[in-house]
Image (cartoon, rainbow, N blue to C red; front, side):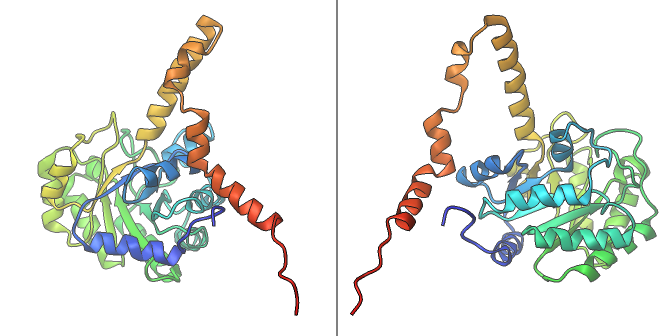
Amino acid sequence: MVLHTRTTPAERRRALRAGLASGRLLRMPGALNPLSARLIQETGFDAVYLSGAVLAADLGLPDIGLTTSAEIAARAQQTARVTDLPVLVDADTGFGEPMNAARTVQLMEDAGLAGLHLEDQVNPKRCGHLDGKTVTPRAEMVRRVRAAVDARRDPDFLLMARTDARSVEGLPAAIDRARAYVDAGADAIFPEALADVSEYEAFRAAVDVPLLANLTEFGKTPLLDTATLENLGYNIALYPVTLLRIAMGAVEDGLRTLAAEGTQKSLLPRMQTRSRLYELLGYEEYAAFDSAVFDFTLPPGD
């Protein structure tokens, strides 16, 4: 059936868990819309990510906590509907107090996602690679994680805790926080804005759950390759905003060319063709399904 995925949310959650348990590195680009999630699957990646920064930018907003849980859940559901890959979503701070974080978990479960991460910034938050962040007290984040764990109905739904404490309180404090979040029930840890390989090594040595490496461009973290991350023992290589930056760069260049030349002719070699778009969307499968429905006739009776 082409109208939706061929797998269930439960199957995709188990697939993510199995991938993390395998010890291999899972490559997880951030989708900028549902159609790009389909491309992520087609090109052989392991999972899809939905970045809070990308979803905010898509609405013309900065990544400072202005989006709502309902907006994120709606886009998440649209994305999870079109890919058989597990989808992990950025749930910011849980959109409020621990009770809000609990509700957010259930919203994302209902949207068909494989998991989410919650961060230990105060609300309103900032992009993890900007200065001036403020982290919530450790005990408050522990309550946030526990509320999320208590609210989870599917034990395979992944609950990841992100700590932004490295650039605020230093590496040892970030590691201590990560351990406390694991003790509170977090299944995995997202250490934000690590500065170099030695800090990746320190986190891996100190924390005995799956770890995510955030390889965002133009930030505080070096863009490590997959071989290095595998050697470091990391479980997820995250490329959260890469596709948005590529796409928006192309859009800007295209608009300038169109304005300057008065025609899009010179841009044609850089465009996805109509036939390729139709192939990606599965037009032929839809047509076959439609014909099978409307050309159906009942067999003659006895």
